[in-house]
Image (tube, rainbow, N blue to C red):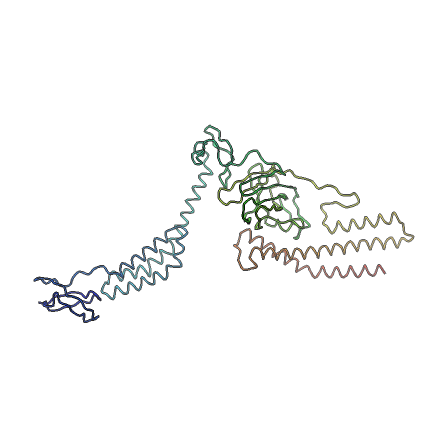
Length: 459
């Protein structure tokens, strides 16, 4: 009586005489040695096949990879590791086919080639979007929910008398006012005065000066700018109170009495006075105070403006408003023109003309022609001074534009995201560079003509 059994090494199906039961035999396919099974007096035929190692390994690898893809954020890593893993599972499916496991082999290959790739492509996107949406929805619900009571807030903070900012919670059922939308930390109601230290755990702020610049900016390192609202200038000092150097990655902001928030104007840096700079992306060494300036574009009817001093920490950030008291420029000597609508070039010309006329009145020349010549020379020298200022200003504009692009792009090694603050600043800097390069030839030509005319009159 013949018996049938499989080789334990290669799974080759073998048919042999029943006398070999319990004896050591050699597989005709792989030459492996093993003991033939014993079946007694009943012919069993082919024995049931056990689940093979390649099949288990294939399904485990596919399953684990798909589970990782469902983890928000981390799931995107499967876009990198998925291809080599699925290539391996395809090989395992082929091995299963060669060993006679047709159904399992085909299923593993289909899962590896079609089902798993589609799943790995979509799952990380959907999982992350759902997680972000759920978090944003919960945050928005907390901000908009008008029924936040002192009891519920105290339950969240673990303190029934106060919260982090030190504001006492009224013992009633009315909603708590002034919850900051961005940080959900109650702002201190008793505002800070300009010149007073505003302290946080990681920093100290002092607002030094504030000016209402009106609806037009001129005399900066860019062409004149107008707005339907108004420009506000603020100068402030910041001290890093931590033990390590920090870098400011946020833009300062001001807020009006209606709660409207105005971020720093994206071209602020091009209109700051010489020697002043903005705070964004600047290094703050530990314990060393630094002075910065900002320009804000606000609505025409914005009143009760306050500068928003803030802590450095990105999570649980604390914000404290400092009401702004605007100062006016002091009038200069009556012999010097102080018309703010005029640019620096026009002011120089007017001042030189005034000085020339004053000299002529005090030391009258015997010749009217000489008087006219002196006035003409004064006018030309004023124009030359104006051109020199424009040339020097444009050199500064060009260099500042290049420096801005280099700083924001790590010397053009790191691209900036379109639409971001850095992108807008790079775009503005590029426009300034183009303006300077286009007007350079005309300015140099004008300077040469003025110098030649002045030399001819002075002979």
